[in-house]
Length: 212
Image (cartoon, rainbow, N blue to C red; front, side, top):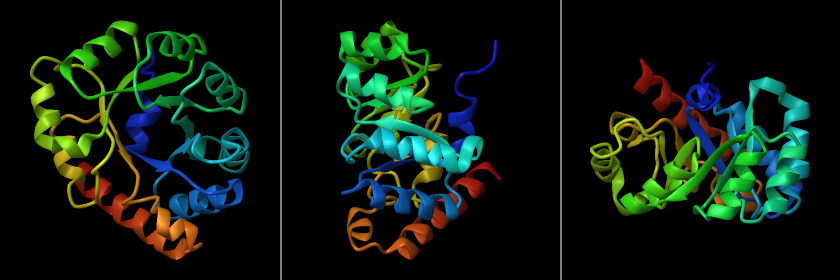
């Protein structure tokens, strides 16, 4: 049976992309991909997220791993999958919404913070449990969750930077979600794509060093 998480593991870092317009989201995603990070989570905080997903997939195909984030309704899940999203991410784990997401057949990642929430997500059958906001506990908290959940696919999001990337993977992350340190809101607002590419390059270098 093929590993459903091969693409996520290969990407390693998912850029959590929030942008004020579809155009800004596309420009930011291109800047991130130029910098060597190929996992792009287009959040529904971005206007017309499905159109952004569809266009990124048209441009990059399998060279980028593109999905939808901040999925909070069944309609969003359906629209994202129709646009070609390879994965769906929700900030929390609502049973009805999660079941709807799972019914799409797409890789599903839902949020949790406590052991009880992790158990709930795993019981529903999600592919990845997104530990969010991971900044609250840091890599040591992720490592502590490894005790009761040694085989659970955990993806910390929040508080991930090039400087601590190795620590997250050493603590057992299957992949990481990177927001402000990568898809920086101020730089996106200022259309400073060179800064965004530089941030992606630092993440890509840290990822390569971690794997090296």
